[in-house]
Length: 380
Image (cartoon, rainbow, N blue to C red; front, side):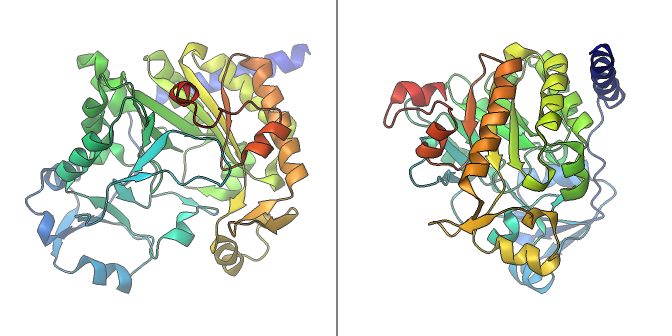
């Protein structure tokens, strides 16, 4: 027991030391070229991004869609163009799932990380990183969608990692003023440690983060090394979470996806202990748990790339939505075990399940909001 306590203290010191070492540093992400849509040349966001990447060569392209089709894979270029569709959309939910009170904002497509399970592989036809520059129209849509009764969270983390290149785009700090006084949170989701630019801004504008929620995807080190290529380590993520909570920013923790091959109850308890000793508990908004699932098309794409992938190790079946899911009793066992761990260290914390119907919540012993209950929705 004494040895376990010593290891726990050493892990916490390591997290905090690494956080200090990275203080003020952004992500080590470089773009050697900027491919600028001719229509975006007069957009202020395009000018700001170009200014933040002074070493990058700028090439004006008149036919961005054709370029993406010709070279769909990732490279060292950043594409700046205008979005022609809607910026604000309803969050997709599983039939029968409790309400989440959430919408998402499309600011960027794709991210610099290369997670093997990323659902964007089956959703987007290319892997190029695209930033949309007509942000004034985006803001108008957000203002129109903001409601004190219905929408409780907007996230920028549905089509990209919210913070991976945020120090370049400035999206979070530009959008946050829209949420002041609304009671609605801007949730940014990340696998990075890129929070320095936000914390620095709080020194001159302490209220800027009043409606901000930073949510970190957290997983055991083995899963990150094996499946989340180029993303920050678990120590870096928890270190950044520690800094953010100490600065007065709400944080949330996503154990999603829990990959069955890497799942070990003791590993998740170790993560909970480290978070318990590193993060201001009063600033934790919620925990979210989700077991690995494959939306239509992803199973085939991953299998084509690596038929022996550890992602396939487990008993999966195709559900009514066309998703490949882990055998339900196994999912419920994992949910119960992780929920027990969270209750052990963070007893008042709210726990949500990701993309699961109400019956699974009930079988896992996790309280779900009542259908149509605005009070419950507002709290979530």
